[in-house]
Image (tube, rainbow, N blue to C red):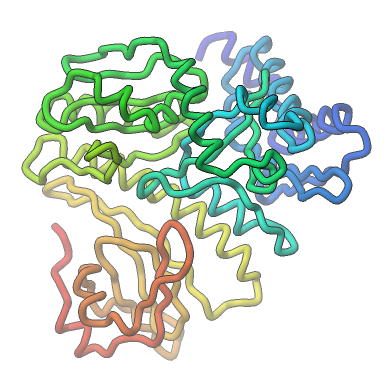
Amino acid sequence: MGMMDKLRRQFTPDGRKFAHMLMKRFQQANAGATLRYDEEHFCIFLRRGDTPEMQYFLGTVYADYCRSRSADRKRIIDGLTATTVEAVPDAFATTWEEAKARVLPRIRDRVTYAFMRKRASNGEKLNFTDEPFTEHLALELVYDFPNSIGSINRDQLAKWGVTRDQALAAARDNLWAISNRDFKLVAPGVHVSNWHDSYDASRLFLHDLIWQLPVRGDHVAMTPTRNDLIVTGSDDPQGLAAMAGIATACLSDPRFITGAAVRLENNKWVSYMPPADSPAFELFRHVSLVGIARDYQQQGEVLTDALGQDDSQTHIGRFLLFESVDSKKVSSKTLWIEGCRNILPRVDRIMFMARDKNDEFRSLGQSTWQAVQTTLGDMIQPTDDYPPRFLTTGFPTEQQIKAIAVKELA
């Protein structure tokens, strides 16, 4: 560790001091607003009058702050403070004619919207304009301010007198207008976005921009962060491996979106995984599973909060990753526990755990997800959560488990 790194760490506030420093700045910029700090979730809530509370989760910005130089730290704080003033509905232009030049499409992870809705207080309806874009990504409309980005809700569209489709068409034109820069070729057949303007991932929406890139086979894309859009070809094993490597390097980025890949099919993006015999298959699978595990971990915290501490009869299943000792292949598992109301994630394998009179557990075996759904489908029903969760009713008999049991992976 260099001297500057040591000094930076020495003068870095802990999470609580950082939050209170931000609250002071937020209050100065928003006279009359009410603020509260949720230490457990590392979040600041800000409310103006009768408007819904704005949520500012601090994990990502705090990570940026800790690793930045002094001059950049001031910019980070100033930028976040600007969002509390700019990125609110009453700061938007009054008419659509004034507003439409500043409207852009934004693609981000679907879980962000799911978590915000789950955590909304007092039953508030957060009517964002987001809709699923791919299995793991959502597309919404945003208002591009000089220093920040504000989500546009459906009430705002109604005030402007436009539909979501009309606004999205204008937003698409605006994104095209600021996309007059070439992708960067980082390896043969591997193209990486070169804008770094917080809308790189959003350019997945511009499929007619991406299909112009020369690749072998169908166009395959990944959006590991908002500033990374990677494109290669489905018939390019080396390109696919390089793509997965770039995405893996982004796993530690606090703004990580998803490790899932998509393929362009008839002007539409569909989920993609290389063939099982491809040298890139396990690389793709690993980065995808790690990203999904992160989503499920956050979701588990949200669901636990929603249940409350008094609900000891509900088990929120964890999304567990295991690596085979021999093959080094990664797979996902969860536990279905006897005597509990289980809310399980979608995994590769389910492990059945019995509970004895001393409240100790023993394994009854494990089975694939497909076999469980086929044989025990009436005991495991989908909920309305995202990422997908399934509610169990009852517990299978030992005979049922033996009938579908598979061996432990080596």
